[in-house]
Image 1 (cartoon, rainbow, N blue to C red):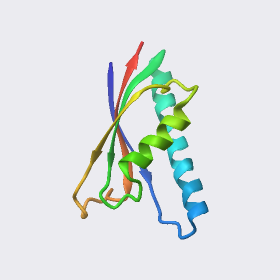
Image 2 (cartoon, one colour):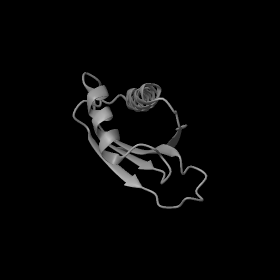
Image 3 (cartoon, one colour):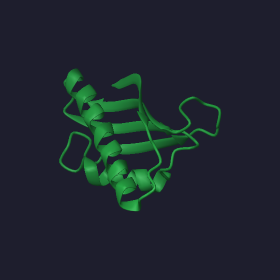
Length: 108
């Protein structure tokens, strides 16, 4: 079962590395809260796949996002979920600094 609903997470640049890492972790936790909320609303037993789109000006690298996601998803409905990351190349996109949740694949 797929859900199609875009949600936007705005990223802002932080000068201090520690603060930036905390900010990034916070964004991933927020993403997981949204994923679990949507999955819970559907009565899902687990999340099999997550598709996100990263804006070209987002300061996460795909590998960095994947690592944060895998760590934060442990013990949640999204534990072990396949994370598909699409990267936008449009610098004029109003969401060029965002991570957008495109879709979820869940097991009911």
